[in-house]
Length: 98
Image (cartoon, rainbow, N blue to C red; front, side):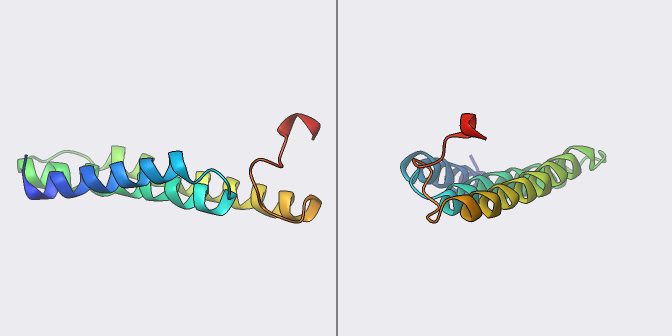
């Protein structure tokens, strides 16, 4: 495993660990999800360069668009929940009550 692959693997693993352990705040959970998506985007966009092949950039662009949609949806949920509930604790939210 090259140092570049190891770096992306460690970045993804740290963000996954943060996602699993910091479930109290919605904003920290969203930041961990965004870090995971960005590490996947960087790894997939540099993968054809390392292999020295001419492939399309469709997969990284799809991941980047999904990441942008996830961020906008998460921020809209954060705003909607902060208007109805004062803190942004995930444990206080119950999506079935909407």
